[in-house]
Image (cartoon, rainbow, N blue to C red; front, top):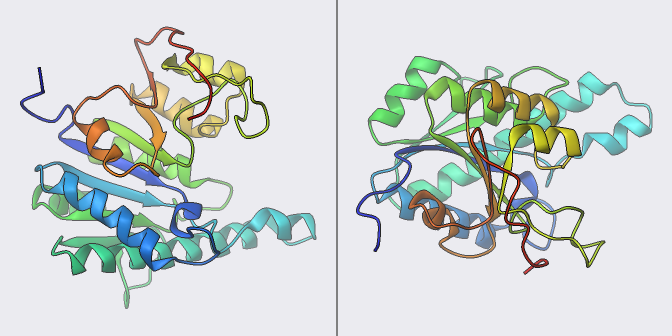
Length: 251
């Protein structure tokens, strides 16, 4: 029997920078449009949506750090890259008639609002999609940690982490054909196994605040809505989960 209402009424969607690039680097118009369409679909169901974007399609600081660049400088440059992606997503959404706001953790008043928690919540209450950019505003923290922090701050019911694979695997399915996918995992299992779903700071923050995380593929149209409406796809990480549902290989 189909659900009569979405499982989640407020979500935090985490989108990697690579998701904006399609098959190239930079910001791909078609890919960004497709993401916006999925978000607009869920927004049309009356779900409150906050988004955290990465910047890896524009800037990969690790390569430069290995060449001797200061880590803090590399991280700040990465934060600026996330702002470009946030503005691209905002534009795509607003061309579809979906009101949105970009809030940045680094002040840049000419192009976006500064991050203010109460203002962000008010935007969500008014039905606007809120896109958080520039990470936490501090170096040494990832956009995964930003997602966990903002989700807790705005009262999201879950973090939906959209990736290029359809869940969390025992190993990298692209490198290991025997890798199998978990149906659900407790927080501590993710931390103890060192599974690369989120960095340990982000996962510990989710665990401390009982914030569930659903990892799923963004490549299948309609997947965001499927998760929001409670369909069992991807991998669910939560407080009351048990280690179960290790299923087939990568799809």
